Amino acid sequence: MTSKKTTKTATPMTVEAAQRIQSATATANGGKVPKGSFAARAMSKAAKSKS
Image (tube, rainbow, N blue to C red; front, side):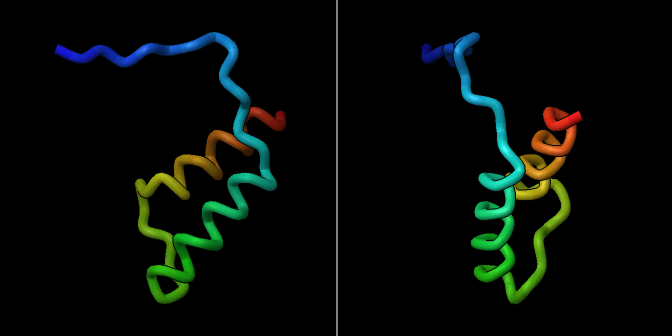
């Protein structure tokens, strides 16, 4: 059985990183970012961590 290790030292998602992820996802999907995709979640997390 494998277990996920969560570290407290994880780097927070930055807006710049989320933009790169979203751009790559949109390019791969004909300009659209699917709802619930990693790119969408990354952008949401970046927006929340910025506040």
